[in-house]
Length: 429
Image (cartoon, rainbow, N blue to C red):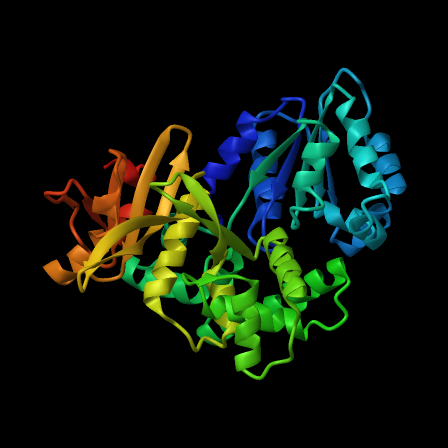
């Protein structure tokens, strides 16, 4: 099955020959290798690049295991680069396999892979592309090591607009599949529901959990697995290490210290399994350090962690909207609007939440996610925070179902979920 991913392919094409290392990051199995080794590879061939000038090194392939040694990797790539008047393209897949555990854990030990990449950068006829599944040891370090000569392209699981045509179903049935089994591309190849569920459960245990424990030296993965389940249960809810610790205690689970929980939360973010959204005081124009919200990168992985027993479409819809905004390149925070209310003759402060404060350069939007809005009372509830924001940026309520696009007397745009998800420019409709 060919799934076109023009958003990412166009970015790769536009960044060709820019003198930077193109670092393609993303969760395991989200399609990084397919983007580089299939879509971009085929594009290069279509432009007349000979096959022998595209050097591919998939480090997670057993046939290439010897090249996880940076010295051998360097020798191999140099042996493939011939005429200096010709341009070569180097693809290194899952580059973290060439970084030792000691290099990962000890900041005082230099990472030899970076020396290899640095050497390739000095060759004017070589264009380098690297994929990896961990932000700490790839994108962020490369940006530091090469002083702005690293160029990150982050790829996510399929968005709904990518998933829908590949599914072969109408948008309603596709939505049910997407929110239940997620957007990892291989899920579309699995023949039935049991196979999909088994695939996701295997990924959680055998790939993501194992990778994290090995990468960060966690000897007992039960605590990390329990934390992953706690976060999966709490998408769309405010949380912090203290609240997570309290949840562990109340459930009778094995206790984990707050510093350990904080570290584990960081590991999950660095592995791209979850994203953290901080709270922002809109009137005060400042960030509130805690608590925050955590959203899962893929809903299928989230559901599989919970044995598919907590399918709350309200929170899942909010998570999908968040992921869509991130894929479109926006920075997304949780908004807070402080208001004063009069209760029993006393003035009290109250915080109203805006689901998403969305920024991209000078553009800003305030967005509420509402699974259903059947009457005027629900509309009033959803727009209560929006009407109290003292600026003129666009305010939007995204509603589940087939809601028609309209703007009310308060200037708030109400749009249907599918109108939002299936139109890249929906925020400006």
